[in-house]
Structures are given as C-alpha cells and as structure tokens.
Length: 297
Image (cartoon, one colour):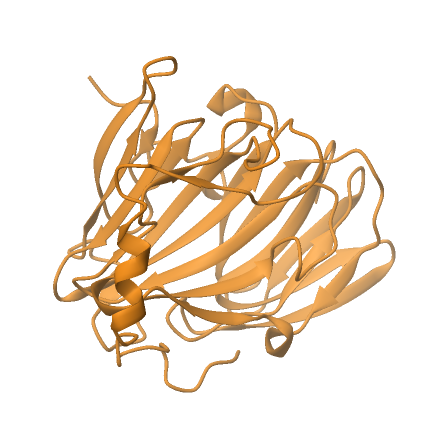
C-alpha cells in the first residue's frame, strides 16, 4: 500500500504543477509547496489566498508580478548551481509567474496572519552554511530562516548532500511547542544530479533514502527511496537521515510552518544519536563542498 507521507514524482501533480501539496491534501494546518513547470513563454495567474508565498527558481529565470509591480528573478541553471534569488508575495494577493525561456519554480507557502510587502531578495544575500563534517557534511542555503528573512510563519532552506554522505542527521524532531522545540510541519522535496555536475538527473537514475520515525505516543514509520521530483511529508516525529547514494549528489528543499507560538526553528535530537555531533569536532568538512566551488545565481 502506498505510504501517504511519500509522494513519488507525478503522484501529486495538478495542472501546471508537477507537485501540489496543501494543508488540505497533507492533512495538517499550515505548510504548502507547489512545483511549477513553465514552458518557454509560459505564464500562470495565481492568488496567495491565506498563504504567504516564496517564489524560488529551481531552474530558469522568471518574472513575478504583484501589486502593479514586477520583479525579475535571475534564477539559476539548476539546484546544483548555487543559491538563487527569490520573490516574496504576502497573503491575499493576486500574482503572476512567467518565464521567457521556461523553467521549474518552487512556490513555498505557509498560512499567514499578517500582511508583509511584495519584495525581491538577491542570491548574494542568501547565507551559505557548510554544516557537519566528514560523511555528515552538507551545504545549507538558509534563504528564509528566522534570522535571515522576515516573514510571518514560513521557514525554508535548501540542503545539498554530496554523493555518499548523510544529512538531516542526527535524526531530530520539532513537533512540540516548548522552550526547546518548535511545532513545525515539514516538507522535503528532492532532486538528484551526477556527482560533480550541475545538471539535474531528469532520468531519475539518481536516488537516496529518507527516514521518518515516531515516538511511542505518536508513531510514524517512513523509509522511502527518493528520486528527482519526489516529496516526503513530516507531520511529526524524528526525521533523518537523508542518505545520498554513491555517484549522485542529493538536493532537497525544506518548507516548514506550524500552529506553534512564534516563528522559530528549535529542534531536539534523538537522544540515541545526539552524541554523533561531537565526533564532527575531529573531522574536516567534505572537500567537495561548496557545490559549485563558486556560488551565486
């Protein structure tokens, strides 16, 4: 029986969207993600409704129109070509996304309670973090986290895991609203590329694995083989590791929001594996990072 928390490519498509995840389809309260595929000259007219939206190019450039203004997103060739610039659309606003040459664009959404202005953020303003060490080395683009971007509730970042490495590890959770933990629903969206290259593996040969598991009080059990275009939902529970198969670099986009208090990313490691963080102190970061060696859109 298919796992409702693993959405293989194409199984949650809707019109121009290769992937459409909403609170209604996911059975939760706040987080959304649409992967918009536009042909050359393509354009869609949309409305943010109850959500705030981040328009993030995965490949290609775009124009985003809102409030009688238009911003140009320079974008990038692929998700392995460094961070991208992005646009923000507040709740309750009609907007349009168009592309002269076509491309793929992530529309990251979260339920919002306040109105914030339409705006553009340059790729050069996106912090790039090399996290972990050794085989747990990964690259994080913190484009819409609490301390990097002003928003109502959305939290979002990109992670690149070199072939053969592990990320989202130690396994951690954020499903309770406490002083040490945030209650956040999370979406993982995956793409893969041959190691050392900048092109996405559209043939879906590249693969990895992703794990989600629960607690005795809130069980959940996901062990998914993931490929380009797949998504995994994390309504609650410990999640990680995300493992990239040898030969294939792994990319994933994380979109988070929730019904908890405030906009913050507080996580709790699985106590069984928390000690692994200390082993990084004696290891170097994987020399293959950053990917690419010169980042930027």
